[in-house]
Length: 107
Image 1 (cartoon, rainbow, N blue to C red):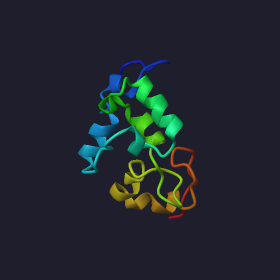
Image 2: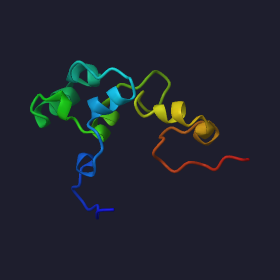
Image 3: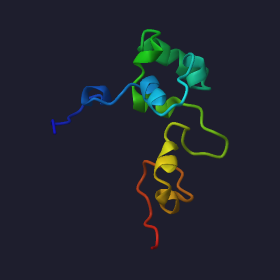
Image 4: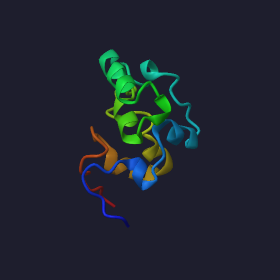
């Protein structure tokens, strides 16, 4: 495993870009920055940072920018965790952030 230091991006470790990742999960990629996020200022900033190339958006950036379904603390792309690992549902019950430490579930 290569040393992972500050400034290493997911793509440098072989992680697909956001749009590619969604396609691998049979989810449609966004058609533009305005459909990626519901925050117009963030869409403009991402458009500038990625030189208007939506296909270059990194996975983690895209997942955090995504619109969240009503009542969910994380986006559709991140919620595939439960689709592919339903046994984690008890551990994720009432979890607002799937990336924060989880409470232990009882057997």
